[in-house]
Image (cartoon, rainbow, N blue to C red; front, side, top):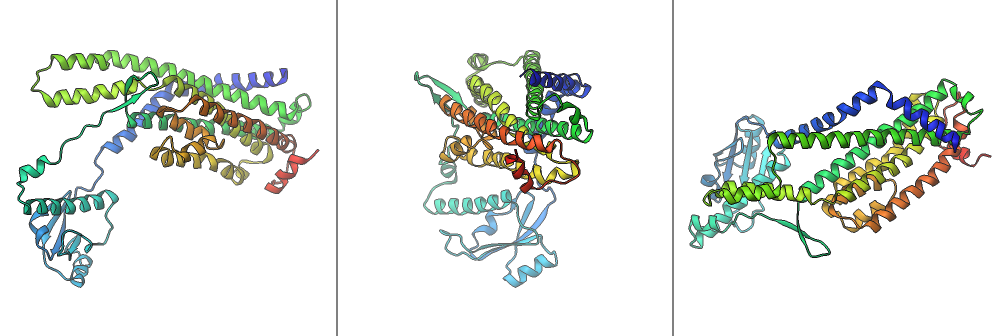
Length: 439
């Protein structure tokens, strides 16, 4: 144990004293903030084409000719065409596209065709479908004798307020968007940290092997002890950096909030009481902001931080043991790819699962299943945690993760003890299997 501590201390101090580590510890939160700000900017900015484009509309019913004049940057021009004529119009670029509507029975639109050289995007096709349906819907209601003002009043503006009821019966504001954003953001950090620090372990093992330093080290330290020292040392580096980011981030948020005079939910409620009753739009805006902040303050932060630390550490230990085995088995960096791809695929798969199954139903059976599979649980459980996961589920999942780590650290330790002294030959998967059972 003393030898593991010596190696751990060396790995830790070597990295935390590095200038790059110190710079990234302070610059990291800024880079992450800039990264998410860039994503938000891209999402909120209108990325659609602004160039005006002409679309011929050939409508046999005559309903859409007058009602559909434009949609986004598309300008519709009435022109009766057969399908062959429509194809030629698109081909010779007389029009950007042609919309053919052959339906006479408007209770079912099933003969609508869009002809163009480039397919519409998902957003544009859904907008076109919705626009056509809305025109028919309004026409049918008008034929029933309803006025336009009456039709408009049939569609109420809906503001959905989400409340969570705890075991004591207390209601707390909740927000699916905030929970998804925080869960997914922290899951992304775990995903990046595992690869970043796992690669540190792999490169450290590979560097010592290629420099032949390891031949001197193993004369006094067992390969298993050296591998565990490296893994735990780099794990402490990651936890140190994350703790520093957490403290710096908290100070920055508090400073910014104080500088701009940010108010909490109670402050916003007080502001609304002093506002004129007729200022409904401003009151509505403040109410939405207040609910968002209330939902942010009501998140289960104790559970979120506990899940992050547990599954970051467990996921890192599991994958870094595999990366250490890869580093000890190969002789040069060009040989790494054949081993690192299959090893990292389960974590990538977990990230995909987090975006699909978990977002559809974070407490559904599929989400729970992948929360228990140790190769995907670090990412999946992190995304689920803001939505409220029982401590029993967390304990079971974490136990499976750490037990799997212990099992794989035994396997990779046996690969490490042979591979770290093996030179000159590029290993295969079959040979790695033999090294596990080699005495």
